[in-house]
Image (tube, rainbow, N blue to C red; front, side, top):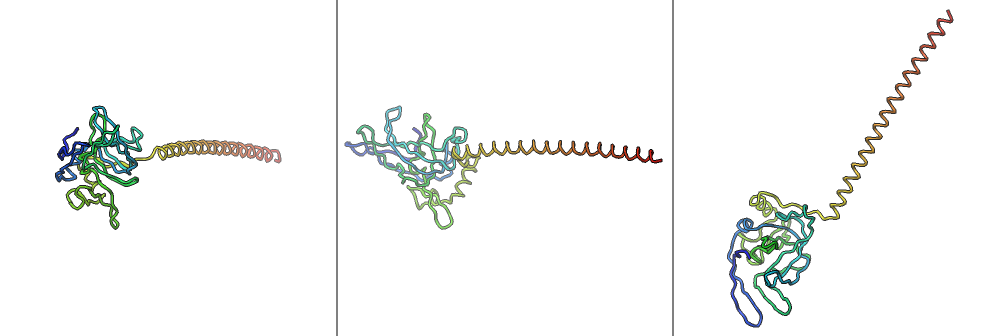
Length: 233
């Protein structure tokens, strides 16, 4: 796993329990370390056993905005993020410092890609709850909720930090349903444009034809009038 900014200590025998000591580090430094960042809603979690045999907690999030996940390319609406610890086949591994969320809660998560799995960066230190405070939306860290270095940062300022550190803004994630609707609407607009173009061409041709026959009729009428005048003489 990655070099966490924390340390683990073995505490008990009956169930494996690890306590965690966190070191304060700025959001900017965490962004430099993160492979991906996203804003989303927590949906659910479950325990799994990964390839190396360790027990992990798999958390599912609904994406709103993201950097580094290529959601549009892969058609992602939801993402899985792993954290150490959980319960698997009677074995419980408890890790103090893993973030906790309520269903539907809006959060910001930083993650590392390790062995083709996303792991939450720095456990709860790299995760934030989004709290509405007056007219502002703030990122509140679970570990240091009152420390202005890592918490209580405006969402708009955080997004600017992402752009400054990563060189790219968080991208809005459009649901597959809305994406399909947009494609259908685009196709429909193109069809309407083609029909309108055909009608315009048809009307233009009809107009040109009408003008031609009008000129022919006027020419014939003029010739007949001249002929009558000559006969009258």
